Amino acid sequence: MTQSVRHPTRRNRPIPGMVLLLTVVALVAVCSVACLTVGPTPVTLSQVLSVLAGTDAMPDGVLVVRDLRLPRVLLALLVGSSLAVAGAVMQGITRNPLASPSVAGLSAGGTLAVFLTMLWFPSGGQLALIVAGFVGSLLAVMAVFSIATGSKSGFSGERLALAGIMVAALLGSITSLLVLKHNMHTVMLSWTLGGLSNLAWSEFLTVLPVYALGMVLALALAPQITVLNLGREMAHGLGQRTSRVVIAAMVCVLLLAGGATSVAGPVAFVGLFVPHIVRLMVGYDYRAVIPLSAAVGALFVLLADTTCRSLMQGFFEIPVGLVTTFVGLPVFLVLARTSIRRKGML
Figure (cartoon, one colour):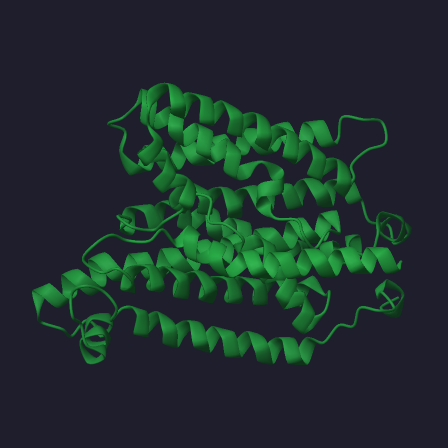
């Protein structure tokens, strides 16, 4: 039975996958500590270690490291991990290596909800924006999924992608119209570019339960996504109830990508190319793809955010979405070109 679910051209490599996972996790730990030293206020590595151990008696160091930089580093890890795993799940259920969480309309729905909150409840604070972003993402996903499953032929990855494009275009147009009408270009530009500035422990603790639930669900769905990625016919032949798997997977994407977008905005390309690169390294067994995507995505956004904090110090902070776009766009073009070539050869 084990041999029957393997695609003839997709090898599973659990031992290299575990080695890679442990290596990336170690890199994440080392880079996280090192990134706590980066910023306009000088902080040494020994001082960072003292603060983390609870033995630093200098109030300034404790304030900078524990209250300002540490929650931001943890949020960068959470956002990167969430978006990468959400992208892996989307690509698995749609069997499309160029799919991302934005296909489900998450970013467009969250952005519109955040704008309306800024417009109608300007004194609501960061927590109100987080809740609004998550609710907007939820409504957008519900709309996309209802459209994608509305026909008699049932769910398909192509129909989901088309429904997501339609909903995202509609919500994006509404947002642009409202931004023009109320002249809020600067405010919305900072949101749509994505960033982690001015975030603290309250934002991290707010999205942490959502992230934990989404990750547990993703890991639990990993074997089913592996089978579903082989094709709906084979999945049905193996007795899988694909509709239930797809619904659970969409809930997982909502929890992970919706939570990340609600705090950081639509950080681009993380959910697109990280899972694809991971599959090139470990194959198509999602028991390895999902945890490694989480680790690689966390490392990528952490380094991108640290780059944002270190460049242009004293002038302005570059949004993390710009850095991920500059890195992700060339990778996206390579992936798109490779995908087109493969389809042309089939």
